[in-house]
Image (tube, rainbow, N blue to C red; front, side, top):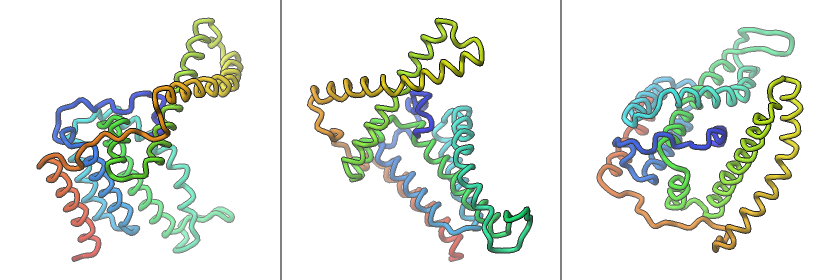
Length: 259
């Protein structure tokens, strides 16, 4: 979610009228968490189980009518970031050597682990993007509180999101000022201006953050996010969604266990 802070609005598809949008935020979070847990618990190399989960996730994406272009853009950004981290898994020493260059070697076990972890990551990113595209950040934070996540952790997440927004707003203001003064026309000037902007950004955001914190305290902020009372399950649609998610998770595990 934090990778997309520069776009300011995460929940671009939250106002659609679909079955998925009719669920309460806690029910959506619980459905996503159940499938994430099932995906994570599946051992490496069980492609049939992940195929079942993939079909279920694509069906929910189709039901929620989210913007495919936005989803693909976010997946590209996230996959590039995660891909760098996953690249090291292909150089594991176990298994038959497929390719070797000096101390580096690609083995069958490394390829299997890379494919498995990449599949898990891709399915997890689909689920998380589905949640963040269709649910506002305040609703997500309230859903976490309803699901008994420690309030202090939720308050830290809320403050982090708020202050990153401040950082982006300050950067956008300075960039607009530089463009209005024709300081971004040449690459050499762009590098100089960006360097100065990054340096002054930290000083300006410290002052802005302090003023925002004092304003929050003046409005009776006590360090924790206020809890809005709402039910975990509001109607039969929430019950059906949770039942379907649990059934899908168990079906995938049954394929893996060959029950």
